[in-house]
Image: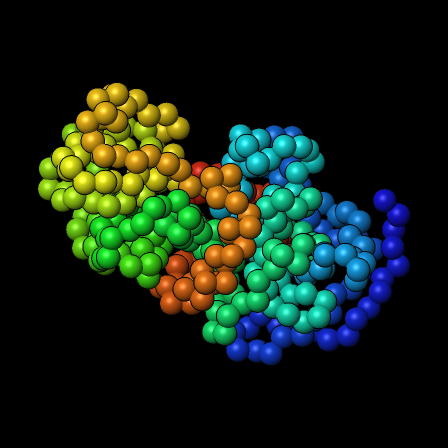
Length: 337
């Protein structure tokens, strides 16, 4: 790729909350990215040619990335084990916040794009850019939209008609996605939210209507206290999900939606469970809902994000990625280019 001469545009960027934003995107000759060159290895911090500014006649917009988070999906894609990561070299990152060359502060996602978000500059389809709502905490948006998206899209796009003040049970309620799922379910009309996880102390801090401590083994868990539930949002899969589904005692419709597999990617479910109950099983993720559906939902989700309780974030410069990369870490890390 040919080295380009810098082209300067005036003004500066500031991501301090409440500051009026403007931007200087310099089409510098080189930029820094994080790059996976072999599946399963840690990203390398590399200097590469910067992308050219998009032709104004095209659908693409150049964005100066201000923050991009490490999600479980990012680790899975970087390992080569996720169905959406197909080729090397691979630039990690599936979303972020940034500023366009016109000075607009945006949230963006890179599903379907040619590059990930762990870069100083990215060219993004205009359809995948969303203006940040007033009062939004930039870093919270960067870190939490992706995990919040899981329950939002499950409830909005993977359910059939829900009763008024429906009841939700969250398997894996202390995962970051599960923590966000509770207030999101309430925003979308839930009248009762039940959480199940191993950490009872953490469960007690989440403002849930009912909690269930998950035992080890999962089959030792007592689900007899669970009333009828309308929706199961499952971030665990494996033995916990199988045991709960087998324990259900209801003649009403139960919509089970798998979102994650923290416990196991495999579940053994006796056929009589499917035959003897009104359980409707589905999943929620890229593929079960479309990118167009995500685009339609994103402005509403971003507005709701401004109402959620802030979560602890570990903010690091992208230059530290080679030593900070840790797929086993429980911290929610944000990289700032």
